[in-house]
Image 1 (cartoon, rainbow, N blue to C red):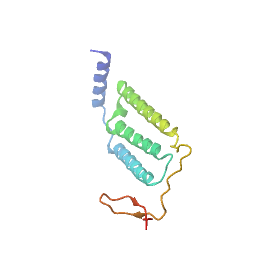
Image 2 (image 1 turned 60 degrees about the vertical axis):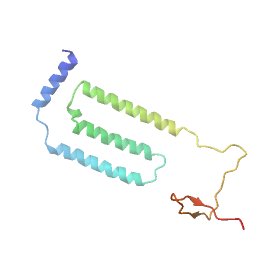
Image 3 (image 1 turned 90 degrees about the horizontal axis):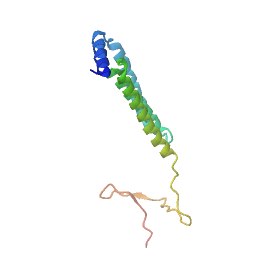
Image 4 (image 1 turned 180 degrees about the horizontal axis):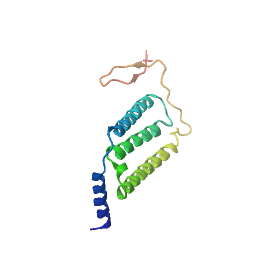
Length: 142
């Protein structure tokens, strides 16, 4: 048997012998998840153009980590399980940070030189249309 498998069997035996804590810890974690859900809903209704996405990703990551650590009992494990969890969190953070940096450093689209932007008339009317319609410009022809 390899050393890793031996360690895993030993850890499994120790966890069965230990008494798991009562429902208090789980109710506390559940309460924290509910508070974070309310914060997610409230911040989702706010207009946060610069930090909205980053805030939503942080809240979702914290909620996912709480579920993995306490409801999946990863906080009680030792050794290889913690290493795998930490490595996966590191890669998720790196992927999110690189994506957000890429989006944050892009230039806004600009018009080519010499062109003029199209301005829609102010008195546009909402058209019902067959598919829910878009905007309809007023008729200017006699």
